Structure formats: structure tokens, C-alpha cells
Length: 359
Image (cartoon, rainbow, N blue to C red):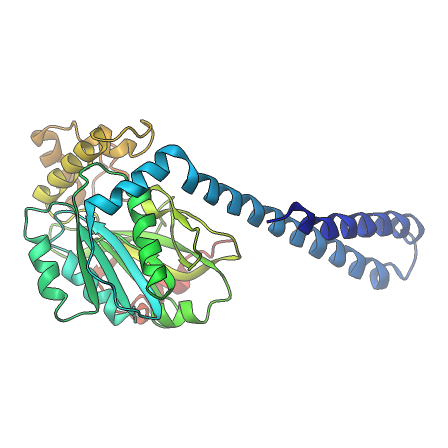
């Protein structure tokens, strides 16, 4: 973007600022203060806010394009042309969901069918060398659902580059919105299906609060009513968009909204799955040259012993405090959901109406 674009904003900011200084002194004690000051202040705030948004969008555009052209990111991204095996993608307008998965056969079918029920037009998933039947499950489901399945033969956990690559492929195939999801996430539109909410959104990014689900000893699920500290995002297509590590942020200019999309997240389903996920996450990060602070919980918890993990699982299903930071663990009061995950937000209405609104 040409920096001259910001000149009118700076000029108007000076005019409004000078006007406020003039009026504030002369009208401070005037009985007409409310009539004249309020529009002036309102205009000042509007002008400053527009300037702030324009500057933020300019920074975001520059950051995204700089990252895409940076040596490390660009090289890893280009290598995916060799290590990703993707089928031809049908041109499909609408909301797309994209994911990379590994050994998620116990939960993946539920999340894919849920996305389909939420109106997602096409789902693009790459499998990263699963050995639990995940790839075979994906192949079977691709005959029933609008699902495109590929292989990811890069074992290292370069999540940002991989999810950005999948996003760009979806966008070129007609995606109007992109939902970067994990296999254990269930996305909901609050006032309608996910597709309905996104298609009517005036924002370009929807910041989606994530609420963790946990199993209990009885087999039922409980929902942590305290939102996870790190939300996720979905966004309107933009050719230079970059999805960051964990799908928590997207480098993409435009207005951001909240409270229209929520995610239920089921990270831990069994003791065996808990152990496998922690170990494979740590191993995949060991193969990268990413900074140590990225994926810290995978690196740290991958060192836990089988005995420690067994004790953690028992504490988890009993609702007791967990002695380590699993990243996903109960932090607030627990809301009973029953034995299965709801299909629409209507079932979550009591919870959604009671939750605190975000700013």
C-alpha cells in the first residue's frame, strides 16, 4: 500500500484536534456545551479510530507479505510442493475448512460430519503418516462428504507453513471463508450454522472463543465454562493471508469480530490417546528448527513417564487438579453436556447466554 494513502487521515486528525482545542476553551462554561462538544468529540474519536484501523491494516499487510517472502518461511512453504500430495480440488464457492491430522481416527469422523452439518462447502485434509487408520477413514468419508484428502510426507511440525499452504489452495479453488481447524474441534455458528453466520458477517476475521471439553469417569462430557486463553480464527479469503502457529491468528487486514463463532474442543479422549498425542507432538517439534518457545507444552509434556500420564488421566476424569500444565485442562466451573457433543448451538443456548461477552 502507498503510504500516501494515510495522508488524508493525518490531515483530518490535525483539523479535528485544532477544532477541539478551540471549542474546549470557549465552550467549557457554556450552556450549549452538550450540543456542540458531543459531535466534536464523536468526530474526533471516529477519525482517530479510522486512522488506527488504516495503520493496523497497513502493518498487517506488510507483516504478511514480509513473512511469505522471508527465507525460512518461503523455503519451507515451497518444499510443500514436493512433500504434499493433493488431489485436484473442485472449484467450490463458499466456506472451506482445512486441516492437517495425524492419528485422530477416534474423533475425526465426528468433527468432519459436524462441519458438513454446519454448512461447510468443502473440507481439505492432509494426513501426516497416521498408523491408526486415519487415512483409510478419510478415504472412506471422501465418498460421502465434500472432502478432499491428501498426504503430508513432511514429518516436521511446520504448522504455520502447512496451514497457510492449504489455505492458499482452498482460496484458489473458490473459498470465500477459510476455517483452519484441528480434528478435535467442533465449530459452531452462534446465531445459525457456521456457514450462515460467516456468509452474513461484515468482518473479515472472526475471532472464535474456544471452550474445552473433558471426559468424566461416568463417560459423560463436561464443558469448562472459562474460555481458553488463546482463541482461534476463521477469515475471509485474502491472497496473502498467513495462518500462524496453532491457528490462533491470521495475518490478514480488515475488521475483526467476536462472539459469532464458538469452538468446543475435546483434546483428551483416553489415557492411550493422551500419551500418544503428547509423545508424537514432542517428536514432530524435535524435527524442526523452530524456536523453543513454540509448542512449549508439547516439548515439556513429551518427557512425562507412563506412570505420570496414568495418574494425570485419573485426576482428569475425576475432576481433580492436574499437577502439570497440559495447556488444555479445567480452569473454571464445569457445565454438564451429556454423553455426546451437540450438533448445533441451540443445545448450548443456556451456556452461551450466560457466558461473559468479549470486548
